[in-house]
Length: 286
Ligand code: NDP
Image (cartoon, protein in one colour):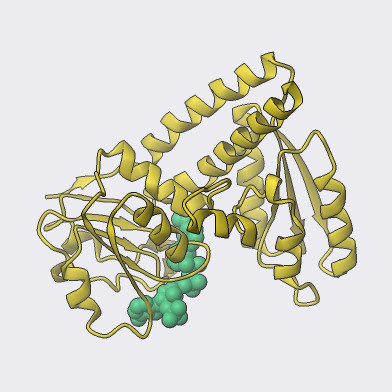
């Protein structure tokens, strides 16, 4: 029976360290600041934004919220981003996605200063990650890497199979595993014989968005399984991309859904904001 990787406990530990780091920086006269921009009233986005604000408050991070109407123009949003880029109280800028259709998402993400890109989605930061010199790393994959480290999973030389190649999870987590000298295979909707590819994996990272698609008999005995997927089944139940009950009979360790990767995402947003504030503080002192 697999060990359950407790994302809540790992996130709580990292958040305590972040809170201490924020307090130490405040003693040097710098309060880390995160600007959160929400356009429109998508209910899920509203929940995420309020969770982010609450997490900032708990860690002692200043959060500046901008709730803009759904009809906000691209020019108005770009104007706000430009203002935040120049605001010395702000060290991280997060524009909650998705944006309404009249706004070009890429244009907005590229307008955020790469030095305040708390989500790590700016092409500059994507490039930094791919050349092995990361500045901001995207929060969900970064959270996966912290979980693996906290669990003592050594990646060098291991076969890692990532299922999903999105820009926010699959591709960056593959880059991060490669940077730690894993042998990485990235699968997607056109991958042939997915089950056989997954059977090779010492570490499986599933980021697909299909409920319980990864079956128990795809998991090699003793593998580590990280399930990023969050899928609503019926009214209330959330399940991951992996058949948890069956996979945990074979895996050495596995993340549950909920309570696995989920709590790490906001934690790494706080971490990114703190690290950015530290960099700004160093620039002030030099
Ligand atoms: P996307 O929809 O952007 O990407 C899904 C990926 O899965 C694509 O690369 C797609 O392939 C691939 N895929 C789809 N069907 C199959 C299949 N049958 N076999 C193999 N691969 C397949 O999703 P995201 O990366 O944004 O999110 C993935 C999951 O992670 C979702 O459940 C999401 O809710 C969750 N998530 C959780 C977060 C958290 O904080 N815990 C944060 C972010 C996401 P192709 O490219 O060929 O279309």
